[in-house]
Image 1 (cartoon, rainbow, N blue to C red):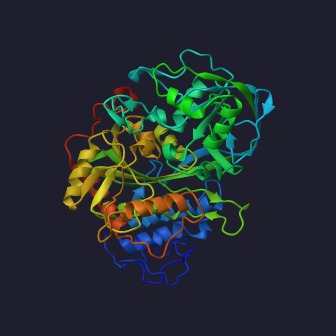
Image 2: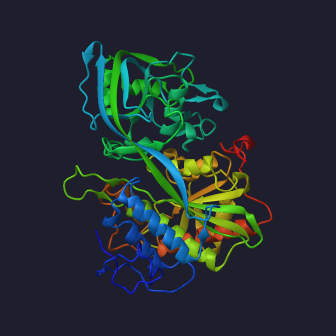
Image 3: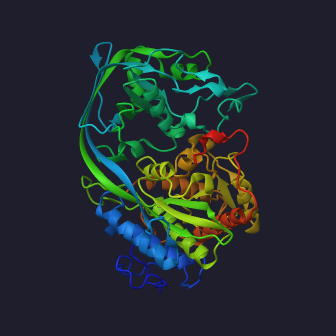
Length: 558
């Protein structure tokens, strides 16, 4: 990968043993200039990103030396930026107890008494969140349950009272795609928000409902379009260590087996069962859909190697000048996917965009707020194990260092803009809360506009750390880089995003690139800083909007 820039990068962290191990080389980034500005600084961002995404950090996986390097770097960087320890005990670390599970999995299926040929990783992936050395599911009846949704507010139930105990459930990804009766090519906006995904469309919900109904296993049917990412994203990590929170019950309340199955494999399965997959998909968008029992069975055997790990969230605080007991929390995940020693050549998932960019942004925001505190306190929370299922954020939300009732807002940063300045900014999850109005006002101050996400059906609002705050009642904002890049053709933004998803997302190639332009990252961080300052100065607090899944007061914890 690229090495650290040879430009005279600001020596902000001189004297910190962890942060000064870098080797300089002749990298030149577009628009990069050295500066000692107290606010958001492009040269410092470059240094932070290069460090966190360096090979020495080995992909920043929890429970590895890469975690130690990451936590030490963030602790020292927050202190050097002038931010106080964020833990009330006087430290920068909140311990997050994890369990690492490395699974050896066997999967078998029979249709009409004949084996269905399956290749692990190519056709199906399966694992367990249960902290058990051996998990077995034998001859579990296969049932196609459409989208697998029970949503009383939409008068929708894919199960129709059928007993799902001990079954293996096949579910479509996303929400029910109900046609709009007034538009042949549209979706009914009165049912599951039309194109925009609700939480019912997320695979996490599908695993949760399967457990609630007593199913033995659930396989989500992967289709690249609805899922929002290619098959390789779910299959490449098979056989590697995965983490779960170290729960007292060992996750015995989770479904025994959860996984994904490729759509092409499901077509073979349905054909062997004498069924048509396209016809079943069409039936699944009707109210009268009922589960389809297949003439087949699935068996799973998962042997786990179990490892207890004490991971860490890193947290820093800048006390507010007027209302110090009320907080605005910025989140970004420091972790990535680690190292896969089975690969030939490059083995390190450096996670430069995802999410060294957001983590570096936290450090720069610490610098900005330390130099000029806001009226309400600001908490910078770098969370662990996002890539494992938002575990660090979930642990904080369940064990907050400061009461969630006094946490007025969460602003999340994940996989940020490295391609230059934009004329707009993308709002993810439109219609959730009044932070969207603050975003629009702050964007106007930059001469930018707020636009809707192009693919709301992919459910990005439920796919990063802010979600753990939102579902506990804390208004949360998630904005992404814009699409109209200054000085570029109209399709540049979409083209770069598509290339990143296809070539770099969750791949070893997510490394620092020599042609990056961090001026857009600076612009977006300044925007989010402005949003936080508006919220900090306001007499009231952000509120959920009518129609949001998170607007119920009961979701807020004290």
